[in-house]
Image (cartoon, rainbow, N blue to C red; front, side, top):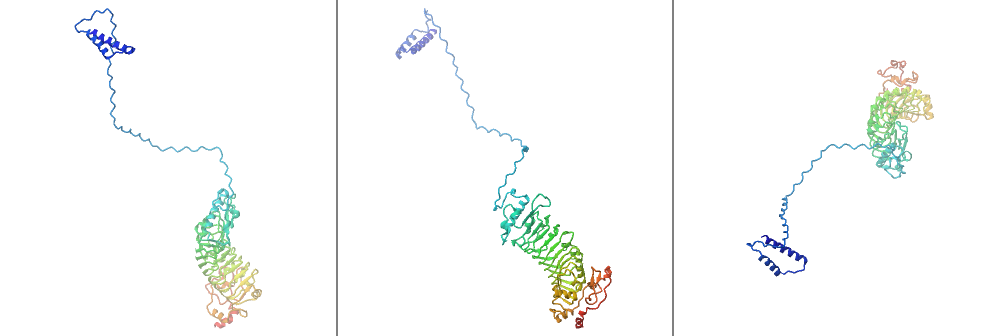
Length: 517
């Protein structure tokens, strides 16, 4: 067995050698013969021969090749499940960003403003001399848009930033709350004939306004409550416009008001009681309400006002002249009550108005005699009682007033004039036409006079009509008619002098009384 293994090994070694040397080519037949020779020398019953040639050591047995273990089977593939989402972050209120660092470097100066364009309507505030002027500019531009008529092209100048210098009708000054500032202080639109549906909203937005005059324009609407919020407003003139409604009561809250002119409009209703309340309007000096449609009576509070110039003319006021008017003896300068429907007798308290220069109650329904107290009007220049139902004699003390320039008594029923009054007629100072004065030209007819005196004529407080309070005396002129009614107070009751003599009718009355009898 060992010999057989050796031969096989020898054969394999020889074959490997031949193949390597490439010197002998062995056919398949030769290889077979060699193999047969080798096989015939080995029998299983023979012992190995005693070989003289040393047997080479057997080649090392081939290594036991273990079959490599197959690779592990690939894992069974399945659709991997998605990883679980990360847990949401814990929400907390973010801390506010840190404040910006304080800059130590001062801010740069404002840029130089460019020259304003005259056509620009939205200008930079730095173009104006004061921020107050810039605010007024915006109000003016809005009002300009609302102007409906401008016959004189006034608004053409309302362009650019120079409100104080170039805008027609606008005036600037230092406001009371800041003497270093510049503000729009006054507006004068008198005679501009501007038209707008309303002007009150425009006025109320100009917070520094102290003076607004807009006589003879075409502004409508009324005066609203916002006007009363202007702290510096003291003059308001909206005369000769198209304002309507009742008296604007909100004006009574303009505490600094000294001048109010709303004449020549279409206001209606009564004149409010508080208009003459000194506590409401303590500084009011000028009050012009004429040429409206005010009605009802003049309030008795007229004696509480500080007004110097009072005009209620050309309305539809009724009733008498309040006796409290005498309380204005130290203030009232001009009183115009003409062209109303005032009635009753003239109160003798009119004669207490020692500072009055003008007193006009022409064209009303007043009656009775002229009170001799009018002789105390030392400053009066104009007296108008024309167009009423006054009668009796014309007091000489009135015709002797030193400053009198015009005394109009026409269209009444006076019956007598003295020498001083005759002189004024001759000078053209006294107009006594269309009365019942015998011997004077241009008088009423006797029939007209008779018809008037055929009616009862009586005034309250008759004794006072001959009393001259500035002299504490009684007039020596003839009495004004029959004995007074007993319901009037006697002068002695107030310590003003003795009771007047109970004189008979004036001689001028004699022919008339004969006709009446």
